Image 1 (spheres, rainbow, N blue to C red):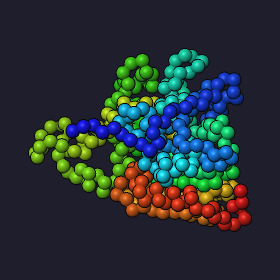
Image 2: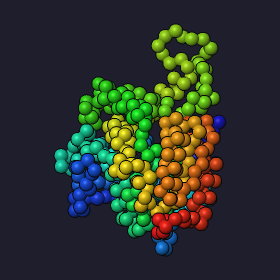
Image 3: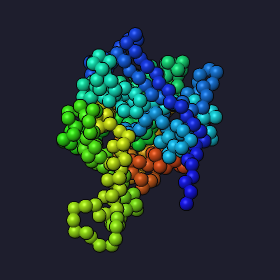
Image 4: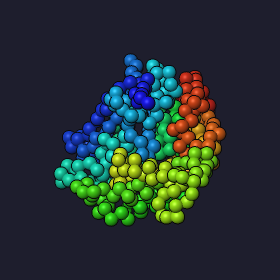
Length: 388
């Protein structure tokens, strides 16, 4: 059987870097510390129009990166993580829109994070890197957008942790976008979600190779990171999707081995997901990004959530997924109701899907139709607060 090359309508996409150096104003973090040198890895798809009014910023989830669509080279085994949503004729139509995707602060995929070199010491930051927030990520993205000469985005789009960033964009920069698309997200993590993050961090920090984060010159804490990913991956699925995909099927043969090795198909699948994750992600970044999600609370500076939306000017499309028990439909509806009470322009749909939290990466057909219609429809204004 031959190996067929991966194809993408976006074709070969180059990576770009935007650097804030010591010559610029230091980047101040919400935790009180500053970074003098910051790099942002990003990609773009489509063309910016003459009046710079067609830009869409796509914000990635926890383990994502800037590579949202297309291929880096012809032999790439996979396309970007949202390739089915971005490209000519797709929901984020690059014949019409200029799409930007950037890697978040604290990550390990080109943007400055704990695996980067500290210019003051010449050594990796490791756990000496300052802890960051969703707001820090957004303020850095705003600097990137400004660097690209864009004063106002047509839309900000994000799912999961990307949706948290999109919410922060709408509240922090209320005049900076016309539309916001939120998929499988929340205004604050539940105690259960924080608990799963903590178990993942403990798996990493309990690995004897973690060395308090200073593992970059030796073996990495692969086992701890793999277990953290296994735990996280369970939260991205649903009971129904696991039943459909695995049930109680054994990985080999039709009888129990009566030993401690993996025997069920679901066990082997989780082990594979953990091992694959170690090859592309940094253990310290897992700690930093999961903590940033824990910190996020859109209403913390307001007496209630609707107060956070009082100054927003964008139209919102919010999509939840019926089997998502990590960021539930109830959490999406909480945002919808708060926007409605604040007099904002909001549309909402729950997609009936068995795929759990991962549905926003998988339900591209119905999701594409909803997003494309929302982006193409004339802007609706309701109430005196919706003028731009």
